[in-house]
Image (cartoon, rainbow, N blue to C red; front, side, top):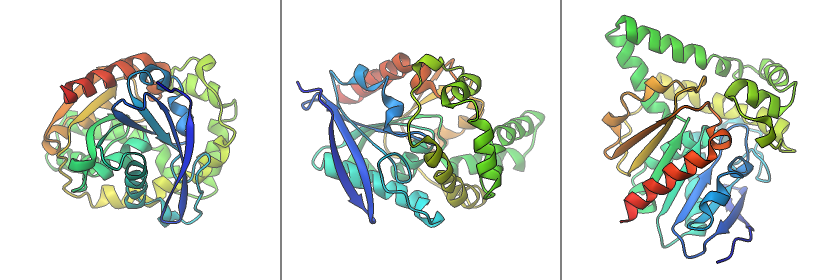
Length: 297
């Protein structure tokens, strides 16, 4: 078994995507997709836990790390990000469907890919952490406001409050100012305050600042269109939700209706904050491995 990391480049829509592979070359392929403002290094604590059993592939999404950084907002639309995802898996595993583990905007991107017809042939299972399907979130919000109760109003207001920072990300200049303020003490200190992550576990990527500022285009290109006009997106692949119960950015209750849209859904709650792939790597790896095992028996 080889555990030496290999790096390749996949080109899609003119974007050069930096792809990394390690682990068991004979194992089930699993693709790890990071969110904002991370790179593939988000998974540095989880990869060693999966590498003995699985063929582990990760990549830097467009706009992050060693991948191409487009400047135009339209390049960050979910349709293009889903296209990147399929380009990567078609390059690294053309003849075999893959398992997927994704976090934050990476999870949002894979939800988009999972709603496409080809998903049933290319994605064997999907484990999602702290990244909603934006269409499902929009439908959930509308259903709660259509027949409001005190509980439903509180839930919508709580998620709105948790997501308020996304409003500032839509405003150039203000978004940069907010990011500077948030990260003023450094990335490890921010994750400790925001997500109760031990700073000793955190490595600050050299591209963090540019990744964070460029990545605000993810919010500008997608949130308003999807929440204002949510589509009916049914998901026919097996999905595991790992729900961080202490996540201050993505509140757990908005997943209450996910079962209406996902035919084969499993949910596991863990007492973690938003950046659980760092703070709770062992739990994430264990739940992912058990879920994959249940799919491959």
